[in-house]
Length: 181
Image 1 (cartoon, rainbow, N blue to C red):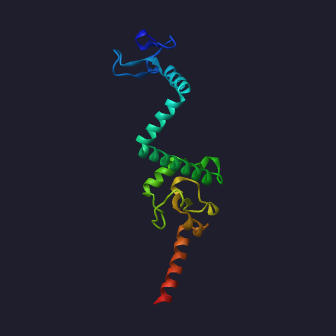
Image 2 (cartoon, one colour; image 1 turned 90 degrees about the vertical axis):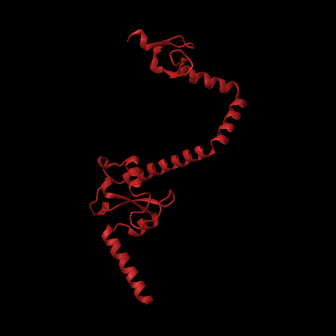
Image 3 (cartoon, rainbow, N blue to C red; image 1 turned 90 degrees about the horizontal axis):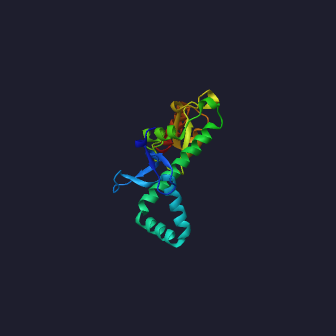
């Protein structure tokens, strides 16, 4: 490594690759004078020495960025929910057919966060993973055999195939519709 790719940190005095330094608009080389590790240590030490200031800065940030924080929390809950859904789907199957939260999220976006059977809007409270061909009937735990549905509908569907379940729903509807007219 030649010297043009190295820079000496002002705090620790060690020559490090320039990738270890953050960007800074106002310096000649457009890099901070200290490495990222020293910068992080400095901030931590400063916050420990000045807890009241740190608390005030945090409060100002939270007030200024309420919507941003709310959206981050919402996104985190959504990620956690998809991680849980993967866990519950994966726990009954062979290790070679594990699905990931990313695959489930892509499926959710493809379904526009709507139940695949009823069209009901899916939320963290009512979302459930359903195997189109049930595992009990030889279905596999692969993304092409999964759909996201409302929990209540998934409970009703139980271990029926999609066709069997829709046939049962048709019979219920026809029976009730014919009795009313």
